[in-house]
Amino acid sequence: MDLATRYLGLALANPLIASSSPLTGALDNLRRLEDAGAAAVVLPSIFEEQIAAETAERERLARLSEGFPEASSFFPAGSVPEAGPHEQLALIARARAALSIPVIASLNGTTEFGWIEYARLVEQAGAQAIEINVYFPPVEPTLDGTAVERRHLAVLEALKRTVSVPVAMKLTPAFSAPGAVIRALDAAGADGFVLFNRLYQPDINLAALRPSRQAILSSRSEIGPGLLWIGALAGRLRGSLAAGTGVETAEEVIKYLLVGADTVMSTAALLRHGPAYLQALLEGLERWGQARGFASIESLRGCMSQAAVGRAMRMERGDYIQILQGFTPILPGAQGGE
Image (cartoon, rainbow, N blue to C red):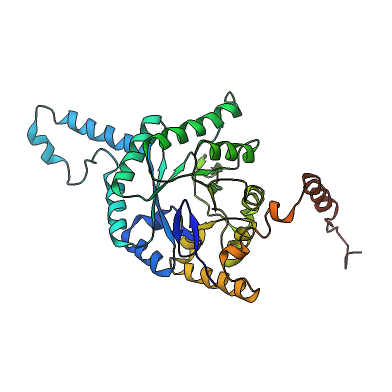
C-alpha cells in the first residue's frame, strides 16, 4: 500500500506526523521518531511570554551588576538566560542538518511583533513550515466572537507578509461557526489547518485550596469534533487538513483519513508509549488498507467525508434525534433489557 501523501505542499512518505510536545524537543528523540516512521516533526512551541520573561531577567541581572563588573562573577554559569529564542532556533538548525524529513516550527505568540519576529527567525533557522498556535481562550466576558476571529485573521495576515514558507493554523473548536472561520482563514492564505487544539480546562486542588493545572493527555473519546469538521471541510478548502486530537491507535488514524485528513498528528500516544509506537500505528494502517483493497492513501482518503457521502444538514439533524431517542437507560431492577 502506498502511504505517500502531501501536507502544506511538502511531500511526505506517510500521513503520520509527530506533533509538538516535549518529545520533539531533543535531537536524539527526533532521530528516534524518524527511525520509527514519522513523516515529519513539529518542534516544541516558541512561547513569546517565555522569551519576554528571560529577556526581563537578563536585564534585571545586568542592572544589578552596573558599576560593579566583578559582580557578574557571582552569577552561576548558565544562570543568566540569553535574550531571545536561541535554544529553539539552534534545535531547528540541528534538526534540519540531522533529519531527512520535514522540520516544522511551532509558534505561540501574544503580540504582532512577537509573531512576526519569531516567524522570521525560525524561517532563517531552516524551518520548512510554521505551525501557528493562536491559543486564545476567549474567557473575558466582554470579548465578542467577531474580535476573536479578527485576531486570528490578523495574525495569519501578518505572518504571510513576513515569511515565504507554508503557514498552518492550529485552532480550537471554540468558535460559534468553526467551518466559516476556517474557510475565511483559508481564503486569507492559510496553507493548512490542524484540527483541533485542546483548551486546557481548570481544576481545583481541594487539599491545597488552589488552582490545579495538571496536563491531561487526550484520549480516543475526543476525536468527535475533528471527525465532524474535517469531514465537513474536506474537498472544500485550498489548504491542507491535519487531524490532531485523540489519536491512540491505528483506528483513529484510519477514521481521520477516511473523513478527509491529509495527515494525522500524534502527541498523547507517543508520550505514553514512546517514539517506537509510530511503527505500530503505521503497520495497523497498512494492514487495514490492504485487507480492504486500498492501493494507496489517496484511494481511501475522504471516502467518508461529507462531500463524498452526500449528507445534507437535515440528515445530521435526524442523526441527532435518533441518537438521543435510541439510547436505552439502565434502570434499577431491570434485567435483560426488560
